[in-house]
Amino acid sequence: MAYSDSPYDPPQRPARALRLIFSYKGSRTKLESKHSIEMMALPSDTTEDYKDRSGFWVELRDKQERVVYRRIMRNPIQVELEAPSGDPSRPFTRIENPNPEGTFSVLVPDFETAEALVLYSSPAGATARAAREITRVLLKEGRQISSSASDEEPPASGEKGPAESGKTPRGGKTGGRKGKK
Amino acid sequence: MGTSDGTVLGVTKIAGSGSASARYNVVLLGDGYRATEMAQYATNAQSFVDALFATPPFNETVLFSTRYSSALNVWRVDVTSTQSGADDPTSCTGGTGATAATYFDARFCNSGIRRLLQVNNATAINVATAQVPHWHMIMVLVNSSIYGGGGGDVATYSMAPDALEIGIHEMGHTAFGLADEYEYWAGCGVDTTRNNHPASEPGEPNVTINSNRATIKWGDLILPTTPMPTTSNANCALCDPQPNPVGTSTVGAFEGAHYYHCDAFRPQFNCKMRALGQDFCAVCKRVIRHTLNPFLPKVKIPDLFDLLDYLRGKLKGDWVSDPGPLEILRLLEILARGRPEELKPQVDDLSTLIAGIDQMSSFELRGALLRVRSGIARLETAAKLIENQIEGKR
Image (cartoon, rainbow over all chains, first blue to last red; front, side):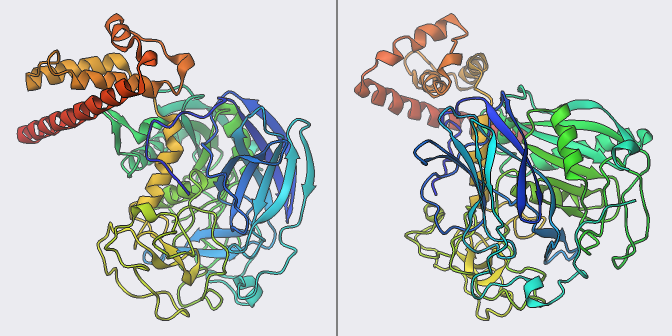
């Protein structure tokens, strides 16, 4: 992956961006809104083949299905959670979220050539497994054409999250964010 | 509850000099601050800015007075809550049972972890979008002295001592797509399923399963003398207890990363994506720079002339017989062509200076480049002289 230290990389164009707001519940995502804004999205990460990589990223694809933009992101679908542990030497702890539900936003350049926005994610409970397409939005139509259950497949051999292992993660029992008051 | 428990008062830009459409926009939201606590919220927001801007690479100089922090606008959205603090349920050990009627519904003890502090993401996104439509990242400051925070699309941290570091770590994830570099899941000595990383290469730029010097993704930062892998974990059932065997700034392949004890590597022994209170590692810093580069302000040509005048006086240089530094202006103009539609020379003599740059042959351009590099070296020498003068006057 090539990263430049130069502050003089040409600014990306166009200086318009699309903000897409998604809601999610479990493994299902739903496009709630899409707006074009006069602002710069973040620069693209590599557009080389990302087959078999793990993690979460968003891609813009043109008519020929070529990747014209890719941005690697923290998985905004909170199938797992990072929390401060309070231990300075090991300052974090992680836990699976059995009832992920919420809202997230994706910001991409508003490229004329971009036909589809595609989200990729590793399966829930298997952060280090290869990511696959979880949903696709046809940008010209503003229509979501797929929303697959990324956590339906079993994790790869040898990788199990604490919930799968039957262990209770440090910090107490698991449970989704409950409504308050 | 939630939005009925307070009011959005408005927004103030507390850092940054560019328009919202040209900069990276960080939006700060406050939760659990009553109307009478807005001054405290402003102080807390400023503390975040001060800490972030003192963190490398945000504090690094790009050119002259421009720093990477110059790429950012920070917006403080003032939101009052009916009550102070956040919910602290007793279902978590140590929870006080306190409840607070707040605008963003901040609550500790999410998913059974007391320090996991979350807010209503949808409300946070709605408010940020309404107040700063150009936002890139949302951070919620929660007015509680209990240590806590959380990540995700909307990051949070509390006002406990040191909790601000959680916010900057979470920003590494949310704003820059960085992975965690620690080697455990629930905790060292707790995990039983985190021995060996699966064979998939992480998409994130700062962790890898590849320790091959020739092909590792940050290989250009590794010195030929650095052992590869730089550390190996002798017992994959546990977190590696060994101390750092090399210098703190050494970039290599340190085993133990991305929630696994073995078969996953991080670039440096320590990093803010591994432990709080640390700097970002070299790879993370490079990713941050790369992300912010398009948002940096353009160099102001008149300011450069002022600087050149200043240096001319300091160095008693003759810029006519030795035009190297002036050639820097040519270079900057070439670089400015990343935005040709905005290329408007602002002073006549500069227009003359750069006239014909488009018509220069490759040979002439190479010659200019050599002179520019020579000029840059001279300016760096001048900058060092000035720094020494400043030091001498302290």
